[in-house]
Image 1 (cartoon, rainbow over the protein chains, first blue to last red):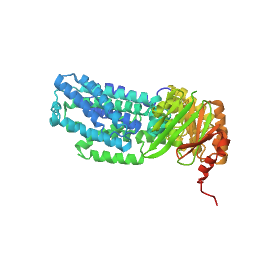
Image 2: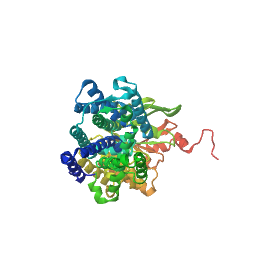
Image 3: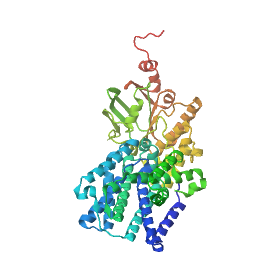
Image 4: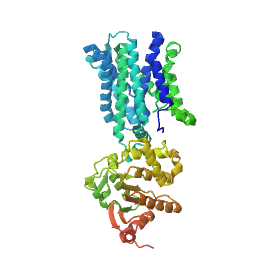
Length: 311
Length: 247
């Protein structure tokens, strides 16, 4: 554990974020659209990292919070004409509230039972939305928010920055130590005084908050909310793939995983159409079998000098 | 430092009476041994005190506070800590991080990482484990893992420590060392100890009083000397029935 000042990884990520802050001015729009998508996936990866990466509770149905955020922005912009930035805040708030309510029940389950409960909730949410005419039923909500690349970009950039800072705040102090104890042995953690239930709920709430914010941005950029696409389990799988490939629980892993999973998708969309999920699935299986700590975790284990640098 | 008491604690598991109205008392600073054959309810009683299980009836009191309805982590914060019979270290964390978790989340609630690590180091050196400080806990030997259990319990700042078979499975040399170490720690850190053992050796050496359980009921209580000469205890351990005549 590093006690003293902030390390290379922190300043590296900070420098990257500063670079991303000015990048849209240096490149044409088409590039910033790629960056918006990349940051969107990065935001999703950090959000699921809070619960699945840090505690080992696999949230297979994490897309439910993305969907809640998307519908929060969609409905508020459609019915009340709410500003999309406020819609993103509303999506975050509802993501938090629903995560706390769902987590209060499902976090009592362990292992595969928790994972199954999250999938069931995601499927239930889709079917509830399909039955609600106020949310457009199976048609969804078509918005007319226009092409606002700079607003999209800086909103999602801000979300990612917040996620990185909070990940650091958690990992480096008392919270992180208690959370690692929970991941290792929940009952033993309780027996040295760790309030296991509260910490898990705190992390699940955070992950719901940021997935909700990300989902709202998704609705904003696609200028609409469509139930089957918004609640697609592909999102859940991609989120999990990103942190498994990047390195669960770490501060660097999610963005690394997002780059590795997202950037090749242009190739898959244009050349090897339809094979993306097969390749991602294959990569996840190989990594889970041979390097279960992901890229960051494995580099730290293999090299003493990198252990000090990577977080 | 308050007295820990159980008052007529009973526990039923699906029709099986694991404990039948057991009352024990652990005055401040004392050492109480709890012995009995396999399945006599020792570990169940310990788990109830530590908040890992709820009693079917009866109460657990810490001083004037009733604690049997509290969750385990809340009981730790009141100053009662338990070691695990089979050590459960946080395997991926280093030894000092293991102890540090207990320092930060235990009764003392030390928030500062550096201070908690210093305190963890102090306890580890008290237990003669300096050299293991930065190793992952998974690499420790069984005896070292048992010491780590004790270090974590001490690190919570508890003044009542429940020791579940910490002396079991040791060679006679290791047992002698462990008993000496235990006395040394008691000299430096004051706490009351409830020692649960399946074998009697260590308990009879360390405990001032001993309670004997058989099939969930208390069958004897007294000084170690009184207990080993008690007929009911001899019968429980050797398994003679009233009308059995050996040979």
